[in-house]
Image 1: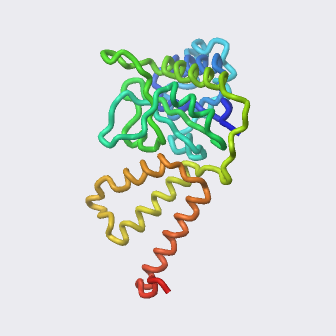
Image 2: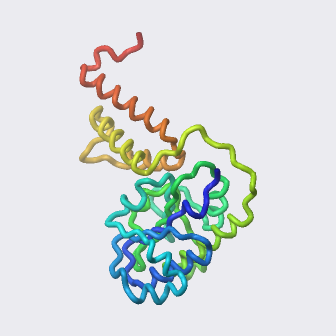
Image 3: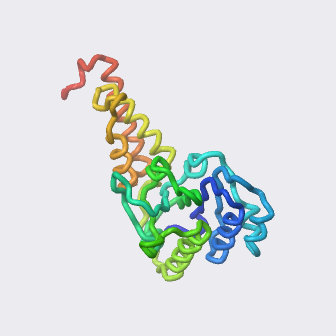
Length: 251
């Protein structure tokens, strides 16, 4: 099965003005989305959020408030971070329209999260590194900044349009579910432990090794079995190191 709108959650990170939360809820409902997650909102619940939501109070009432991005995306299999800035290490990049079209071509998607950052500073570099792809909305280069609720409206509109023209043909299913963000993070932590132990990564000067490994994993999107295999291999490497490496060669 392809992604459905019910599988897509809009995640607002540390929103400072409650009106933007209400505006985002209204934007979502007009385009058929209902999963709103709020990470450490400055003011919520708040009458201004209710007022701006207009007829979308049901979306606000079901909103999930969490204390961290990990809590918002841990069970997701695909995470998109909205950003208007280029980064030091290039990351897969998509426009809102390209991303929306891809959503309904991918089978077995599982929960999908779209992160919208703070009104004044957006998402941090560390937060953007948690994302499979960075999303940009083409705009006037002299003034490309959009209000958070407006950005949500544009992305939700593209999702609704892409869903409306999606074919009814069932996509070919993958034989395993995609790995969740939580599983990917555990694999990266395990990888870093082993690479440090074999002195491939120097803790005092790690460079960009782990960042590039993260980018690779998020780009290829391994399934849950592939992640389990990689972690199993890492565990065997650790066991061989514990034995002193005396019997690690081919038999």
